[in-house]
Image (cartoon, rainbow, N blue to C red):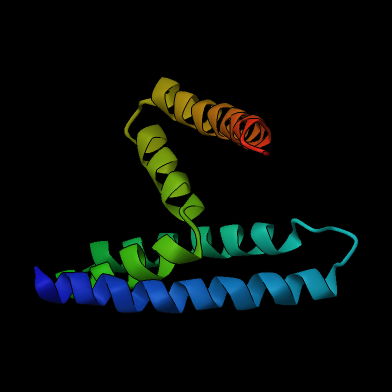
Length: 127
């Protein structure tokens, strides 16, 4: 358990630093489109989780601490959107299209609503 926790922590640091660097780099390349960095890390994370999970299924990543480091650690701090994408694909693959659509709609609508509520709460706390 401790080794997996350590693997997640180290991977998380790498993922967080990668996110910071990559979003800044994309924002410099596309200053007129501020979300470019977020879009980039989300798409990159989705590609990487698809690759890593497939390699795991094929038996190449069969150590729990490697999965903890790469998928939970690096990708978890690079972007949680990759986990959302993967879980949605699994729901659709397993013939749960209604749950897949619910997952997409819920994350999108509730996420945006939560941002708006958080902004409203922040305004209320403005002394």
